[in-house]
Length: 326
Image 1 (cartoon, one colour):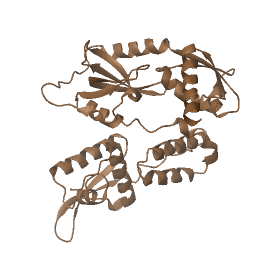
Image 2 (cartoon, helix red, strand yellow):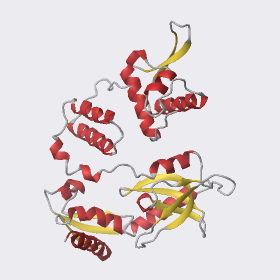
Image 3 (tube, one colour):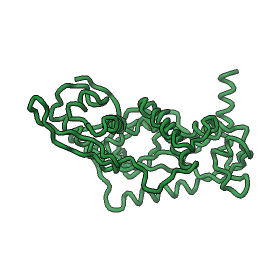
Image 4 (cartoon, helix red, strand yellow):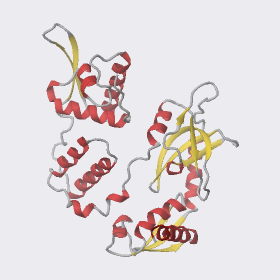
């Protein structure tokens, strides 16, 4: 069997697109295993592959896409099922119209997926979105696109660990520390706080307890999934998740930055200053170094008013950049 290392999300996207392209004819399990990237390109799917395709179809249906199943009999008297996406699955609701802002968001989202280099079908999807008629000038999007980044590479492995209730070994580097340390965690839940992906988990390192880990601080891009009697998963109990979130919010509320943004610049768009009453923006942040990395992209378009630690971090990065390219 040919093995293709792609994520579950991409595999299901490939399957959805393939079913759409086949229309009412649909596809058999053999068709899917032979033709759809992610299922091995095999002629005869075994039981494990049939179960995998079945799980993917159920996930697709849970997302709101209706997959129809029908039995057919071919010329060789073999009986099988065909699977097809219902005609009305991708129709707009009656009377619904996409306005300019909605289309702009759809195109931005398609660009973000395209940046993640999933497959060429996504490029085609962006083209179809533009064909709706209200798509913005792509040149106007250039200053916005860098702020959208593909999902962190650690995300798939951690998502699998959550789904399978599996313990994970990671290398984690705290802010302000040059070396990383090995942690074993039982991951529970993803959160996106102030633009940063965080995973809530139980840390098995002494002292044990719930922790909030920044995905960008995980050094190894492919965390190790652990198995066996010495790798027991610790699920959240009682109010663990609420306590972890409270801890996160308390930490976030103590980290506040204040910046002045120059009007009519890329920074003005990035920080959505059109919704501010003045040119001052208050930001809560999870990690001063990560915020500094973002602000350095707009170095001549902003002025950091507080805190001093953020000013120092931004200046240190700029000085390092100058020294490297001097």
